[in-house]
Image 1 (cartoon, rainbow over the protein chains, first blue to last red):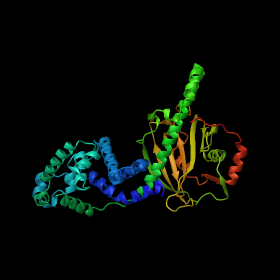
Image 2 (image 1 turned 90 degrees about the horizontal axis):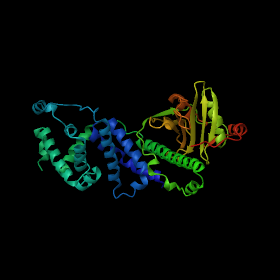
Image 3 (image 1 turned 180 degrees about the vertical axis):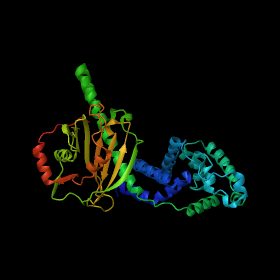
Length: 164
Length: 256
């Protein structure tokens, strides 16, 4: 099997998952598609190095995260916050309550990435620190803060999931 | 808690209606190949430029530098001269050529045949500074002057491995149009890739070979039309190749 064929096999198996992760980060399917595209192109270019990685999936995720954070840095002034709701309104009206994805959108890009990697991708603290190139202590403290903020944002009946 | 949160994420994702994923993998391979090729060409250009600079320096300074030039190896080129993955503005489209490929018998393409076809496809104008690649690569360049001054066009043809099981040219080319305002030599690049792996790259610089600013020889639409002409390939029409051999029996090697 050639390098290109190996890449295609891996990419076909992981593209959907990468796009889901990208969507959770940016909450925009079209941007998620672009980020996935960018990440796969960069992965293709570094494929020979990538296949030597201990965890190829994590390597691909790292490229995607970098693409997302780079995008955020370039476009930080242009991103809108869709579905902005005032807290009293959604607290009183269940129809308006925030979804988890809405709540995630209230976190900073870096904190959102931490939560997604920890609780969606099931990465360890060390792995998150490695992917985001952050100190372990920062990952731990930001995880705590992010979960606290999510608790504040989500409706009471949704908080049972945090009880554990 | 982790399990609960993940289930929550999954449930919300499942409630979404994402658009079709599309051919992200095929596009990544095409874009990756194009960027890889561009990096290779840029590196070659840097090496050529470095050698040229050292060569001219040798003329001015005499023998000591000649010795230094002979000691030059590709590894001595500063790493920074290799192009990074560029932050380019690019868009991809699919072009139906209107024909499944060039008809007639084909033979191995030559640089002369590429120049011959290029002069047929360009808008009217006086051509000059014809050049070909110093190696066996199918790359040519020329200047064209339509009365508004000279402008350069470069065309390269290569063959990648085909996508999937496609062994025939097919009637649909994927075209990538890239604008690179930071590099006058690649200010506009149009890459057309066919299902059989044939890649045609048209560069429309906004400078001449010596980096003097110039107009662009083609608009993006004209460059797309040129790049997607089905007669390009690593094999070309036998008669066209024969005519070209008579018309361009000696063409100088172009500077990178």
